[in-house]
Amino acid sequence: MKEKFQAINFPNGIEFNNKLFQSIGVNLENVENVDIDAKAYLIEQLGIEDNQLRDDSKNLIQRNFIHLICQVRNDLSTIEERLKKYKKERADLDGVKSNEAEYRRRKLEYFTKMNKSAQNDIVLFLTKGITGYLKEIQYDTLQRECAKDDCGKIFRNRRYLFAQFPEYYDADFDYSTVVKMSQLPGINLIDVPKIEKKYLEMHRNNPEKYYCEIKKIINQKRITENLKEGIEKNYHLHKRCEMFMDLARLYEEKHYQSFIGLGLLQLEGVFFDICSIRYDGKENAGTLVEKVEKVLRGKNQVYYNRFYPYFAFDVPVKRNEIAHTGLINSQKLEQIADEVLLDLNAVVQMAKTESEDKFRLFFVIFDNLSKVNSTDEKQVNETLIVELYETNMISPDSFWSVLKSPDLFKDELDFYKLDHIQEGYMDLPNIVKYISGLVRQIPFWTEMVNLLNLDGINKDLQDFLLSMAKDYINVLDNDCKMKCIEILKALQ
Image (cartoon, rainbow, N blue to C red; front, side):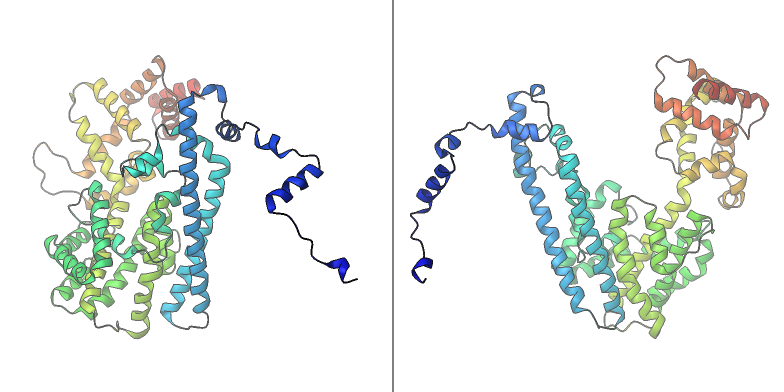
C-alpha cells in the first residue's frame, strides 16, 4: 500500500507539458507558429472598423492603448491604497469620543464613498468610453507626457474626473489653502491655479513662511477693508454691516479670541444668506454642514469637490468648540484668526457672486448697446437679440427672471440706485428698466420674427426664439403677443 502512493518522478516542466499536450492531440509547434496580429486583435476588440484606419493610425491607437492602461492601473492602485488606509484609520477611531474624531470619521466615510465612486467611473470608462477616447487622441500620449506637455494634460486626462483631479479624492489634501487662495481680490481667474499651487507647496514644506505670507496678503490686499465694503454695498449682506465692522476692529486690535468666535458665527451666517438668495428663503437652511451642502451642490462637480471638504469637516470642529466652550483652546490664535479672515473673504465673495450675477450681464449688454446708434431702432434690437442669444447658455436663471419681471426685484434694484450720476451714465435700476422695456416692445419682436426668414437658421437659434416666445406670450400686449404666436406657429 505504501509503494502505491510513492511520488512520481516527473521530467522537466517543458518535456512534461509537451508530452501532456501530445497525449490529448495538441501539437505545440503548430500553436506556437500561429501568426497572431495583436494590433488587429486590439482594433477589433475596441469595435473600430479596420478599413477606416491607416497603418500609422493603428500604430498610434496601439501605443496610446498601452499607455492608457498603465495610467488606469496606476489610478486603480492609488484608489485601492486610499481605501485600505481610510478603512484602517476609521477602525482606529471607533470608540473615540471627541469633536475632532467625529468629524474625522465623517470625512473618512465621505472620501471612501468618493473613491468607490471613482472606481465605478473607471470601470464605466473601460467598458463604454475607451474606444471614443482613443479615436479622438491624434498624438502619442506617452511622448507628450515625457515631454512634460502640461498644456495638454487636462485634455489627455479627461477620461474620468479622478484622472483630472486625483487630489480632490484625497482626505488629507490641503483644502483649507485652496479655499483661502480662491477669492483673493485683484487676482485674474487665469492666475488662480498658479497662486494656489505656490501656497499649497509653501504650506506643506514651510508652514512658518506660509503664515507670514498670508499675513502679508491680508495687509497688502486690504482684506478687512474690502470685506467691510463688500458687506456694506450688497443688498443681501448689508444687514451684517455692524458685525463686520466689529470684526475688523477686533482683528486690528489683536483681540483674536473674540474675532475667531464672532467670525465663525458670521461665516455660517453668510452661508445662510447664500441659501436665502438661491432658494428665496423658501427652504430650511439647517446646520452649517447642511448649508454648505446646499450652497455648493448647485455648482459644478469640481467646484463642489474643491470647497466642500473644508467647510463640511474642518470648519465645524472649530465652530463646535466655540459653541461648546465659548473659546478656542490654542496657542496659535493669530494664525487661526488670519485663516478665519481669509475664509470669511472667500465666502463673502461667493455670496456676492450669487447675489450679483443676475445683474452683471445687464451691464455687459448695455455697454454693447451703447456702441450702436441709439436712433436706429432696427440696429438696437438686432444687437439686443444677438446679446441675449449669446448669453443664453451662460446666464443664470435669475437673469431671465429680472429681465422678464424687474418689478419683483424692485427693493433690491432700488438699493443700487445712485443719487448722483455723471452725465451720459446710467445706474443699475435704469439699465434694467431700459433693457427690460426694449424686450416688451413691438420692434424687438418684429426683429425676432424676421429671424425666422433667414436662410439656414440653426437649431440653437430656433430653440432660443421658441423659448422666448413661450416665456413672454402671457405678459405682452396684443401686438407683441401676435408676433409671439407667429414664432410659436413656425417652430412648434
